[in-house]
Image (cartoon, rainbow, N blue to C red; front, side):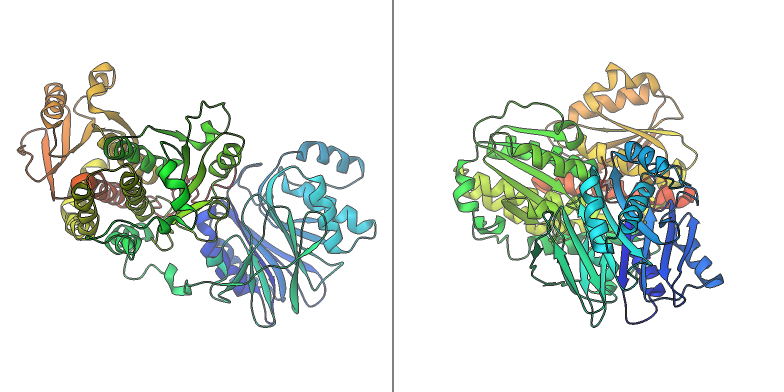
Length: 611
Ligand code: G6P
């Protein structure tokens, strides 16, 4: 969380940094700030509580002028989201620093620095890094050496970017956990938390590894490993364009991303799935052919929406491939011992590829007896991708809305590809496999059809605006779909929403049901339908109002207490993917009616690079 951007430019850097912050705002939006080295050799700083737009206004009122600078958008961890806790932080007006992550030993360092006479004005952990760098500069180090020495003293997971009056032509940055990219311009160079932040100024990037420090100057950059050795790094050209992150005709990024799903799914299928031939193991990388035939169990680890994708995949892996599958949230997985079955594939799911808990789980998996690590991810340059032996990229394109939509459905499509690959090796009937491939290929057009429900769902959503709570029900693979629907609603509309397997209703949640409790039900036309209908009657009998998303062919009639929304049929095993779409629309429109900040809901961030 938190976004950082900095650089040494050929021109005034204010607008470059500001645009970078706008593009990084998904990482946190509690406060924003910028510091530049101006022509009179002073560090000038502007900071504002709240979103980047507030800082932009401050910069209209009082512009900054300078070619070297750093900027930050914050997701508060240590210290409330106030202006004095906003970054950049300074030490004696000579050093300015922006920081993403957590410095775990800040309390001890703070005490030492107070003894040495350094004044603290914030409650952040960041300020200790600013003062330690100043301390090393005071002892005669240049900025690069001062940052290197400081990094050796800091514990935790963090990325920093630093400027100093002592060395006014440089930005020195480092990475120890959260991501940091270096952007190569013409006669100017930059660092940022992600590639998108720098796309307006360059498409050429390299990526820092953990423990590395980069010295950014106008004439070039140098990267140093933890031991001080200089390292050479390849430059990658990004295929993304600056416009890939525009909202276009849509009112919100989330809305755009919901409607992009047919295309995003087609992209994730492109070149990998054909009706007439099996899926090639090579889509997971060169080692897949050796690893996949040996897989006899799968451990899935993920967070948030990605975790829900894993829960759905479990039904597919056990139901189609016939191998055991465990699914766990990464923050739990990383802190306990596991009994790993022989030949288990460790599968992580992550939109960003930078989620701290998921990465830590990958690290923990190395001490356990896994066959290999496979990651399904939307960001090719991410840490997760670089740390996995096998990779399957979702080609969802950048997802900006904090509530994940197209990243989720493309993860499911990628997961089904993995399921089919494993099924191929376990001798599952080839006609059956072909029908799954046809279902995958048919999915974009079915989602297109489901999106046509938009006006109907919009009208329905108005009825949720005054509600404080909602229950979501599903059975089998549709229970995680219900969980995802509940998560979407609570994330962006702030309505308390819970999901239950419909059969569990009578074991507790039924006590909550009355006329004020909307109950949203995912009703596929499958063998569990009659059981599900009995569960609906239990709700109806208690005066609860039902909103049933029913697959075509499910015989349920609209009536008092019963609202039926027909969803197209024909998705087969992929019906959970299809059923997710109307639930996304329900959450979206409810949030719009409530007037919440749909793309940047309170207290959340898109990329969670802290524990
Ligand atoms: C945050 C985001 C969610 C996301 C979760 C996991 O909480 O707001 O949308 O599902 O992190 O992120 P990942 O990038 O690992 O999928």
